[in-house]
Amino acid sequence: IEFFFFFLNLSFILKVIVTVTNLFCSTGQDYWSNKYPYCGGSFQSPIHITSDLLRFSPTLRPIEVRNYKLSSTEQLTLRNDGHSLKLSLPPTMYVAGLPNQFTAAQLHFHWGSSNWPTGSEHLVDSKKFAAELHIVHYNSDKYPDINTAIDKSDGLAVLGVLIKRLSSKVNQILLHICYFVFSDFEVRVPGFNVRELLPARLDEYYRYDGSLTTPPCFPSVLWTVFRNHVTISRHFQFPSVL
Ligand SMILES: [Zn+2]
Image 1 (tube, rainbow, N blue to C red):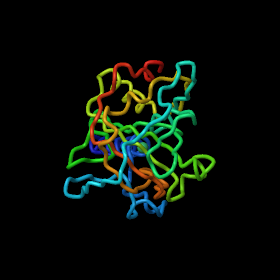
Image 2: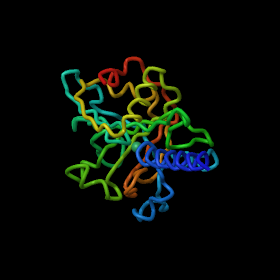
Image 3: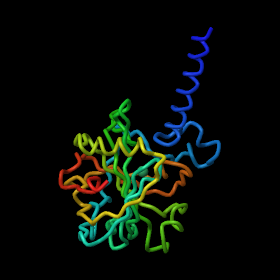
């Protein structure tokens, strides 16, 4: 009986740990729509991109990124907000080649865990990737800042980059951060060339109208997911300061 009791306790503790981990390190997306009405709607991102859904559009232009090469004298804020690693970006960075000018606000990563190493949000032909980078921009032709733009149908443009394999060093650091979900932190890091995080070709991408991938899931995002994946470059320095 004691053993059984111990087992029950243990399974309860494990359940709590799993729940807490899911809350902070994963998504728990099945329950989002109860609290956030937009979640699970027809514009819900991410999506499964399948070849049979794709149509070539001759009207789309290559993505043009501007001022992505930041000076190392520029100070960026890297923040672990408990469920993602987010880096602030200066308003000098923007994307052209879209219906409006979209100014950069922040970038962040989605990644997996040791049990679940494929953490990309978008799937391409049933394939998940190790991680995914999102560079978030807001429509600065129409809105003064990201907070005003976030719930507008033409408010945001996100560039999504699928990351095939992280170098073991970066991978470890990212996992490490996820384990420290409760130690909310913020550090200042020097600027770097953000263009290096994108694939070489910016004219091959998947485009669709979607949403924020996490609550409140506003259907406000013009998505560009690059067709070519990247591996994280050794020149990419920001985690090394942690
Ligand atoms: Zn994201």
